[in-house]
Structure formats: structure tokens, C-alpha cells
Image 1: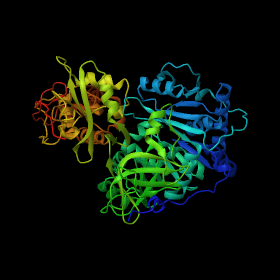
Image 2: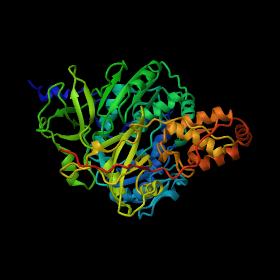
Image 3: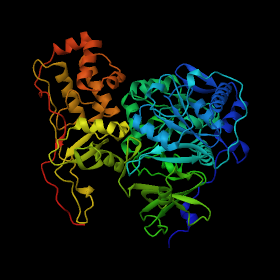
Image 4: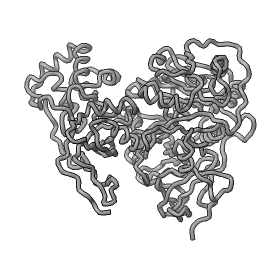
Length: 632
């Protein structure tokens, strides 16, 4: 007999402070905390600090400046700045005006930023002197945080539970990003639940490492401030360098870190030993067992977190205690209902696979200016009249002891290094290139733990496809994490008899890849020596060209660490990973080494001599086999 809705939903009782006026808004909660502990350190960035009193005063000054620029309750204000000391104050300042914030990473392509600004119809933009020049043209006033001085400010605007707190854009299957509108009630319920479990309290320091355009940054920047803890903000160049990140954890005394599996691997590869007092939160994509096994001996607690943006960051939690057991997504957070439904919308009994649907206090308002899409993905909760639920598109099942097991996607959305990627958006953008007739995208593993985004591209008759041109076309509209790292040119994409794309028959470019370790030739140049290292680390069937960017041909932060370790062994000196990010092609990296480390590179070139490949053609794999039809 199938379980009752109440039994299957397994509502986790509310945690955190009781409902009341202070619970109505995040900025109200932080202001109340500033009244209780004005001298406690709220924010750290490097050696700079802000007390709770300073944070609240700074947020009020930012709110006053925004009001003077015409910002009123109910509008959207874009935040276009790097992670720095002022970041939490800027978020809170926007909220104090009654507006909602739109977080934008300055690294995003200008065209994409312009689309988001226009779609949200932002009333103002907060930027800094360093990021202002990167803004696309837009008619709203731009305020520079650097120019806003402390000033007397009025009371914060009144906000209701249903008012928008932020809008955040996610990848869209039609080629157009969609803005998810999250309310104050959504956000406060989420933070209250996280404060109770996994838990955060005064005396804790959480190191914030996530770009602000990724919704999980909300936990990092705001949870410490509503619990009386401290948020230490890591700079972008620190987050991509495992050794710097390890040093920052120690320097800031951080005992809590939320990160994707890729960042945890980066930290472990840099020799991080952990701490008995450390709480590790992992989310954004499935937590692999080998990573859990490496983390568990190093931390006090390890938590696996799951949730779509549409239900406010995380919706379920699972404490991992045994890496040899299945790693589940666990149970719902406070005031959240989870249902596993079959294709008829009926509850699935434990063990039966269905679609995971989430209801309760975290369900967002919907997609901004997308009523049809909102109606498609958000629906009335048939088990709780007056409530709504979100259809996640994820397959799941209940275990016998009331935990959720997530089993992948119903559709072709993928998760890559923590980012949600609608492959349809990449395909639509690729198909806009004049030389492309059709395309398909998906994720394939080059090696265990080394997942890469692959694009299969069918050229128009007579057209010649070049990887560099395709990437340049995509880079104008898509963020870096949505750029394919491998292109496969096909005569035709495989189709089913009904004409639909047969994704299961797309050739895996890594399936039969067995590569010898290349060796540099006698008298090899520096570029040739580096080429051998790159090809070995990337497991590339064709050697990379001198002008190809490492991070666009399969490279990741973790593989960059491996490259730098090989270079360190060869030179006998540590080269910071940030130099690799600043010089991401073979030619640029070789020139940087010769300029900054002339003695060491000279010694390397004068040393060992073995044979290796010559400089290669551009790296586009060609599939010689024509596509064939497959039965349904």
C-alpha cells in the first residue's frame, strides 16, 4: 500500500528562531544581531574586518545612496562586483530599500549580463571602480561602492514575506536564461533551517568561496550574519589556487566551508589536513564516495546538500558518516515537503523511482516574466491545499528508513562542477553559428572524476568548423562553465525513427581512449616540453595547439594543479596557479615562465632530452562514421 502524503513528505520540523517580527527579513535579523553584539567581527576579507555595528551602518549608508538614486521598494538592483569586504553590506543595503538584488559575476560575458539587466529591468546598479568598466551599456544609474560614504540613514523599508529578496538567473533550455524570484519568506526559512542543521553559531567562521551569481553563495554570505558567526570572504584568485585556499582556511581560522566536489578535490590536492572542529558542506553535484572517504577522517561533520534554485538553495540534507554506504540526499529541511511521484502524479512507495517534487516554504515565486514556464514547472500541491510545489525533473526514490536517494535527471539538464547547465541553451547558441547545421551537447568522463562538456557538431554543407571559432562564438553569450571542452564533428547527428535526437548513440570521445605518455624530443623547446605535460594531464587524443586555452580544451582547476605540480618538479620552484590562469595558452605560459623564471627554465632546457610530438593542428576531433537511424 502506498504511503500517505504526510508520511511520504516526511516534513522536517522547523528549526531556528521562532516566527516573529525579527524573522520577517534577513536585513532585519542582521540589524537585530548588530544590536546584540555590535563589536563582534561579522566580516573578514584578508586582514580587513567589519564589526556587526560597522556592517549595519555600512548597509544603511548604501541603502540611503540607493534611495537618493530613486530606488524604491519592489524593484530590482543589480550587484556587479567581486567578492570583497563590502559584499555583504551591499546585499543588505539593497534589501533595506525594499528592493531585491540581482547578483552578477563580473566574469560573465557582457551580452549575457546585458540580457539579465534588461530582463530584470533593474532600477540601479551597484558596482566598484574595478568592475564599472566591464558593465554593458544600460540606462539605469550606476553607483560605485567606493564612492559611498557613511551617512545618517533612515529606517529600513518595510518588507513582507511575499516580497522578492533576490532574482537569480539559471541556464535555460530554450537558449534564454530564466530569472528565479526568491522571496523573503523563502530565504528566511532556508537560513533558519540551516542555522539549526547542519548548524552555525557565534564563534564559527565560514569561508565564502562561491561566485555571487551562484545561488549557494546566499548561504555563505548571509547564514553567518543571522547567527552571530563570522563570514570570511576569499578572493577569486584564492579560490582557484588550492594552496592559497588551504592557507586562507588556516589564516582565517575557518571551521566551516561549503563547496562543490571540484573545490573540495582542489583543497585536498593541495595537502589540506582538515581539523577535528571542521564542518564540511558539499553540494552542487553528487558527492562521490572516494571524495567522501577522503574528507571524513579530516572533519568533524560531512554533509551532502541538495536543492534546485527554484526551491531556495538547498531543500534536503544528509549527514555522511560512512563512505562505503550509498550517499543519499537525505531528508527535507524545515517546513519543506518532498514527494516522489509517478507519471500519473501518484505517490511512489519506498523503493519505486519517480520524479522528485518539492513543496513548502522554500518554493520560489516563479520565473520572472515567464508565466508559461512558471505554470509548467510550478504547480498546486495536490496533497496540501493552498500550497505549491516545484517539479525538479530529478529522478528519486525513498529508502526504507525515510531518506531520499537521487538518481539523475529525467531530461538532459546536467550538473558540471556545481553549475546547473541546460544543454539546450548551449545547443541553441551553437546552432546560431553560420557554419553549424545542428549540434548536441552532453557530459562525458575522460577519466574517473574528470567530467567534461562535449559538443557534437554537424557542419553546414561546405562549411569548415574550427574549435577556436566555435568557442569564440559561444563565449560572447555563455559563461565559461558552459563552454564545451571537447568538440566532435559528425556528418549527421544520430536520430531515432521518430526524428528525435538519439543522445544515447552520440559517440563517446573518451570511451576507447588509451594514450601513451608523450615525451619531449631531444633539444625540445619550452613549448614542446609543456606540450607533453599538457597532453598527458588532459589525456588529449590530439595535442593542444599553442594558442588554445587550457580551460577550454578539458582543463579544470584540479587539472591545473596537476600541471603546476609537473612544472614545479621540472623547475624546482613553485609557480602560483594564478599565473597559469593569467597565461592559459601554451604560448603565453611558456613566455611567462621564460620571463619570470629565466634561470630555472634555462636549467630545464639544458637538462633531459627525450622525444615528443611536433606542434599539432587545431584540436577538433573528426568522427569518420556516418550517423545511422536507430529503432525507438
